[in-house]
Image 1 (cartoon, helix red, strand yellow):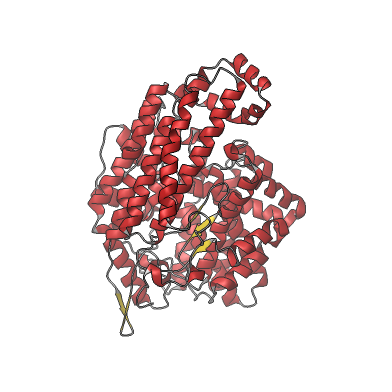
Image 2: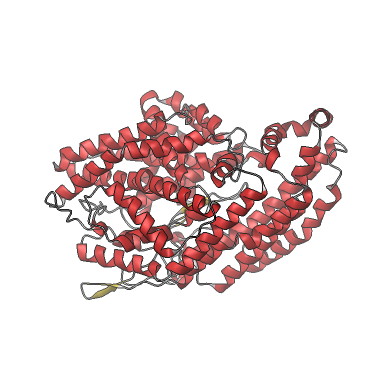
Length: 605
């Protein structure tokens, strides 16, 4: 790839179909204005929720409808900005949409304090009076769990209004990273290879070490040029969350995040602590992995002569896989879940254009799944013709199919699901597809290529993410204690933590290694990263169960996908057969890693 096309130059089949959301920006603008005007519909219910069951139900349904329309407007602007971050129109649209979202939240802020003020006996009488309220029993229960942290209607309105200005740090970081940040091109074969957020993954697995080195350095240096700006935005984001933590009376930001995220999580602290403890206990497995890779790359013990940029580079080239070929492979890999799962997924991939997979100038880094009840479960990614892109697609399809089932099964109040279980569904898909590819591998080289993809997946979720979780915990504790963050501190501390994981087997470039915190927008979602690690552990255990037990385990897993927010996340996992309150699922995840390291040793030893 010598240069990237403009967004408007991409073939249609490489882009997602947003027309079901809005056919044009003018239609979007009209919807934004309708949402803004509809906010007043919430006013008549204020102070009247205990009046009758019909009034309470009408208030809840009105809030849901307005919230859904506001979210749809925001999602459209966000999707557009993700694919064309330099387009000022989309940046403006997203800013307008977020402002309206804050207005909706402020207008509805009285609802939860009023519900909490209703005595339990009266609430039961209202439910008996209006059968439609029975649907909300779990929601009411979750609200009661949050009761100590819900403030008066006035304070809730102020907090809701403050969400827009206090939530702007991630937007600032996104603008700096996706619109303003530039990278040196890489010279190779007389050509200039463009380095960008969408192309860096492909360049880091390039067959030529010189290209990998130059791309890695260019990408890190591009971020380091913004290190002070991004340190400031991250500090602002953490301070904003700490402010909310204190305003709501939580003892710590970690306690708040475990208690409630975008839904009521109700997760005990032991789940977080178990993860870090099991991760640290299994660092020797990672040390062994890096030593094996160094040996395979020709390193001579005890001198660590494998540079950092080359440490995770594949030992064998990935087979070429087109997007359409990958779609068919993934559909075959997911066949143990049956037609109920595979057929809608196939339509989304090959007919309905759920996926935006082309590479273009201004497209942001990473991959994600996004959607709402009544919309496609869209997927954002940048495609390279290799197994790593296939794996990313399988991962995001796990999210999208989870959303597909929960939104089509549950009413609006329970149509979403906790971030804690989101990463289970995504990693489950990767595990199931990977198992099929390993079974079908006809040569040691192909098997090694599949293992390389697996190691990349485990490296991200059981190495990088637990390290970031420990790092993030320290950052919040530092701010909560009255300290401050700076780029030199962030770079040095993260480099130190990663170095512990490399175990002396990799040649470290501390500043560039430490700059990795700037690559993760996840840090603007408090205590998100640890859930990747718990997710991959649970996912691999569930995938093993489906492959070993067949249809019964598959049906339990499909039921897990359908429950949405109608139960708490740990209960949802128990439906599938996993108890995340114990360290055992994380230990099983590391057991899978250890078995793959054993297999690697057999192939390269």
